[in-house]
Image 1 (tube, rainbow, N blue to C red):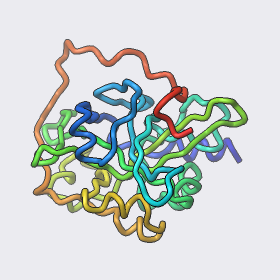
Image 2 (image 1 turned 90 degrees about the horizontal axis):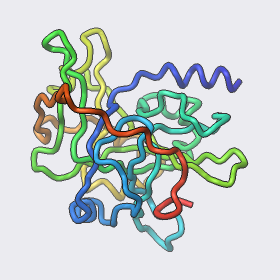
Image 3 (image 1 turned 30 degrees about the horizontal axis):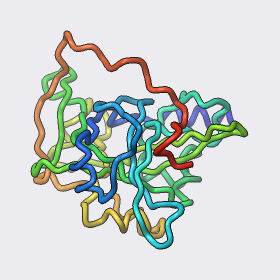
Image 4 (image 1 turned 90 degrees about the vertical axis):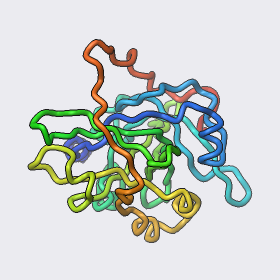
Length: 248
């Protein structure tokens, strides 16, 4: 059973695999109503890097938000070790309720908002892959719909990880241009700031209806290739729960 689950998880096609974090603490707090985690996190993220999420506070009386740090790429319950060997950085909104890696945390309402300043998608209009940048037209941070999971498998350390939700974008004026021509067009499920609290606390059935394409006129986009001389970030972040600013 676990082998089958692993194979199914590995077949998920990833969409967004690169984004920029909100590195200014004041902008983060102004946009999401909570201070960012105290852990020092990278400014640019790739899969398996540690990033921040905003979720409903677990210990609060009534509704409050809290920020946490976790690993980008959801570590499913059936993983035997804390090493993430699954393509779980993105989750399709139309399959999340049934996918082995996702159905548990989705049913439990473990939703979060992933703060970003910008994210990148591959543009193949020229016949080659060009990294294409997307951000809000007003310059404010983006809040992307996601959900989180915790994994411990009897170990003392409990690992928090998260994934980003995607929606179909075949008819979207901007995102139908992204990815290879033969691929289904998908985009991150960007939330309207007025919907942040509703996303974090509404019933699961209602949450599913909130996953819709973000309007094209609210984005600004441009080519943003990495300089050929630029080196990638240092070694991957250690997939271990930090001592402060965590869920547990």
